[in-house]
Amino acid sequence: MNKQVNKQVRRARRRIGLRKRISGTTQKPRLSIYKSLNHMYAQIIDDLAGRTIVAASTADKALKADKTGNSKAAEAVGTLLAERAKSKGVTAVVFDRSGFRYHGRVKALADAARKGGLKF
Image (cartoon, rainbow, N blue to C red):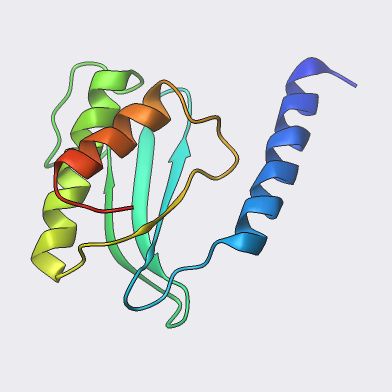
């Protein structure tokens, strides 16, 4: 099996295992992230109602960044997400890293969201 396909399969397995244990409620919704090579996406989801409460990404018009695939851009997404969440009344979330390792851009986004006022 090709190395890239193998990485994707392993991530998918980790993601399924995480989603068995993690789910968002109305009081504590799920902060789900996705990272591609060029962008970082994050959304806060209420799984019981089946709806997205707040979303932010490096592709947003509100977020102007020169480079969108680095830790600094991920930090900006975390800060923007925390601001939007506070305006909607969300203070505590469950962090869903979607099978990605907790380092680099994922960690930068999480730390910025915590600094912005979200509690995980």
